[in-house]
Image (cartoon, rainbow, N blue to C red):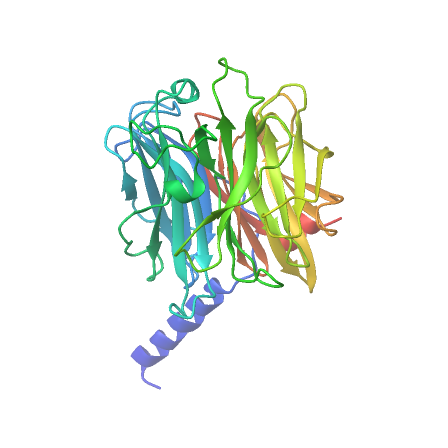
Length: 392
C-alpha cells in the first residue's frame, strides 16, 4: 500500500479510537464560559443537551455588566464536537437589547415525522425588570422558543408562547396579557427539558417551570409554585400543567420514570426546609399524584438537575446539586434505581464552590455535567464514567 494511503488509514483508525474511547474521570476543570471574556462580565445558568448528530450544545446566560440576575443578558451557546474536550467560540442565540433573555431550557424532539433527523427546541424567558419589581407588578416576563433542524447551526425566528404558558395580568404591556391568575414571575426550569419516550404520553415535550401569584413583600416566597407546560403536537400548541401544591416551589427539573410518568425535582425558596421537593405525575405533568419533602436530598436553596438514563437495561435517575444545606458547595451526582424513591450513591464532582448545574448523557459509558463554580466563578464542564458514578 502506498505510504500516503497507509498514513490516512492510520489517522482514520486513530480518530475512530479516540472518538469511541472509554470515558475517563476528568481530573481538571474545562471552562466553557469563563467570566470577563468574550465581551461579557459574567456567565450563569447553564444548560446542556446532546444534538442529534452527537455534538454537545451548552447554553448559558451571558451577563454584560455584572453577575446580577437582571440587566443586559444574552442567551448564548457553545458547541463541542469531541465530547467536551474543546468548545467553539460563543454564539448569541437570543438578544433582548438592554433587557434579559435567559433561563435556557433546551430539548430535542426525536419523534416529529416532519423532522426524522430530530429538531432542537430552545425555550427561554425575557424580562423587563428585577425580581422585586416583577413581584410588585412593575415588569413583565415572557416565554419564547426557537428551533433548529440542523443540530444548532441555524435557528428559527423566535415564537412567543406567553399567552399559552404564562398568566400575567399586565394589559398595559399587551391587551392579551390580562389573566385573572395574575402571575408576576414565570421561569423555565432552567436546565434541559424532556421528551417522553414511552407510554400513553409518548412524544410529549415537557418543560418544568415555576411562577408566583399576586403581590407580596420582598423576600417572602410562599406564593411561589412549581408547575410545568407541555406540547403534544411538536410545538404547534402548548398547554399548562397543574401547580405542584406546596409552598415556595421555585426552579425545578423533570425526568421520565420507568413507566413513562414524570418525576419533578423542586428547589424550595424557604430557609425552613433545606431539602428538595419531589412530585410524581402519572399524567406526565397534567396533575400530581404524590408530593413530598425528600430528606435524602439536602439543598442550600439552589437549582439542581435531573437526568434519566438506561444502564445495563436498568432505568436510572441521576440528580445533581450542591450537597449542602447551607452553602453552595460540594457539587454531587446522586443515582436512584427505583424512580427516585431512594438514592443509593453520591458521587462528589467538586468539593469547592458550586451552584447551578445540568447533566447530559454523552454516550452509554459517559456522563457529562456543566456547572457553576459558585455564583461568580463561571461555568465549567466535566465528564465521568457512568459506572464510576453508579458504583455502590
